[in-house]
Image (cartoon, rainbow, N blue to C red; front, side):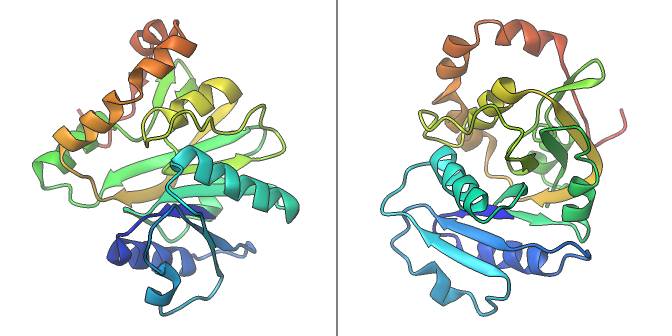
Length: 231
């Protein structure tokens, strides 16, 4: 399991606790990529069981950090790698539900619920299922990288580090690799930032996806969201 971390120690603690408390027979390790934080993050974590820290020399961005994790996993002969983010908490059987949904897929995503569903921001994201990915018919167009597992030996390409922000790097990754599944039971809980902050971040790399995939706008119109709320 791989997560990228910056400076939010409290959120990281909560995430790591949820990862350490997985109900599973699977053997797994937790890899934390410190993406250029000046803090000695490891010193703030009390329980280091199953955890390995990797410190990058500067902030390279989420795509680069995830690729570092993929290469570490490859050298360790690991086949499946799950990704999540520091501002998330995973459910008890998150890893098992992703793993047993892999089957013939290269990538499997899960359901992302708001950690605070009664707030306006939380309700918005749950209603539109913004981090559940999008479907075209019975296939997934993409799944967000805060809640995915990948078979690193079935990937055509890794994450593209020109997407230097947490913005569209996961969509580009999915469009390049295809063969994507979805697990209803692989649930995580996301602590969302403000909508203004989030959409500003998305806008920073939006032009890159349209430049590389001119057909993406058409695919987007053909696809549907996966809401967390019965409409």
